[in-house]
Length: 56
Image (cartoon, rainbow, N blue to C red; front, side):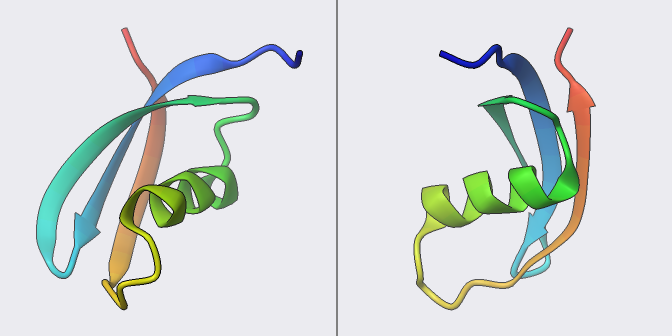
């Protein structure tokens, strides 16, 4: 199993600020967007302003 680290993902969903915690391998924006897409599904929601940082 690959090593993962807990990250906080700050983003906007349809213009509303939100955040989620996720276990990611690299913490890249692409990986975070994939995790958010999995979480929110294919509902047509707009995910923008994605910022990733290590959780404390």
